[in-house]
Image 1 (cartoon, rainbow, N blue to C red):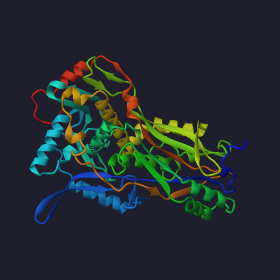
Image 2: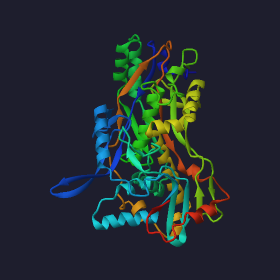
Image 3: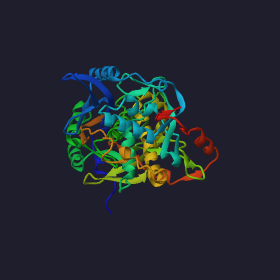
Image 4: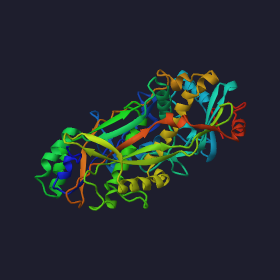
Length: 459
């Protein structure tokens, strides 16, 4: 009976990790004002700097220099409008009316004016805690903590006081439209070596000794790794958040950059020859973890509880053809590192905004699935055509990430090899399938009603 041990386990070189590093980023500046032909023109600035990586038109990712990041921060800071009065205050529960948001968007479109920063930043929302339905007002209201905003040193839009990243209109639009599509697929991203690259590495391995030349040779022979995105448009900002968060996780786990949180060491620093399995292929991925949704008896008030991100681990293996196979199991060291990342996630989300952006996108994905599953637009007799319609608010279209060069590191693990894999996976439908009736939501629903307000947001 053929052995299930991967051929890579026979590599004589002490290669411990061959990792494809992908960082894609996107910072959306809603209003950059410039004079062109004597007219005041508002343009959307898209850049690929989150995670320190740039992406070209062919989909190849490369590092972004510190100078470029510094320029991005200055451009963003200069472009941002002053935060409107009231929005610059910290609010425990800010309300954003989707009906009012559509009215504001339509007003700008009809007047031929650009959308203000406040609309793109969803009035400074940073999480979604409640989704409230008001049939008599044809409205759905999102409620959560919020504050004013600023540009951080890396060019991210973050809370002026807390430093936590903001939710963006663009991600809300993508989440709603993804949920409303006929194919309710899981939102995911993955970065994987090709089977051809794996076979080339195997053929080369026995000819090399550990050292800098071996690292360069392995990187070259493994070749570019492939990037896949499902469930959302590959060109969307939402997709960029998924991939950038995956990139950051890999960078930290493999020790290619210091962890921004002291309590989280690199995975590589935790393994040694006695613990490494002969077919070590650690696969780490991030997925949402929520408690059951809480609703009122009428299904008009919903609370999203316990929203966090869990790091998962599994050990895969490569067969003789370089094909990766999941085992459904994990080794103790991989599991311990994943558990540490989960425990540190709140700190990570503050120290590196991409992890906070990922959690924001997960909240919005849950909101989108809830709106569709419970037919909240039907209950309000408001189909939200600008937010949900494909001909409504245009979502950002960026160069799709396709591939990234491999990167290797060496540790002393005898004759063992590890190739890191992973990704991000969001299944919002599994979250909204679980709900329970709870107390207190009627009061929240009544207290949050817009009444005679004419603004699309309020505290």
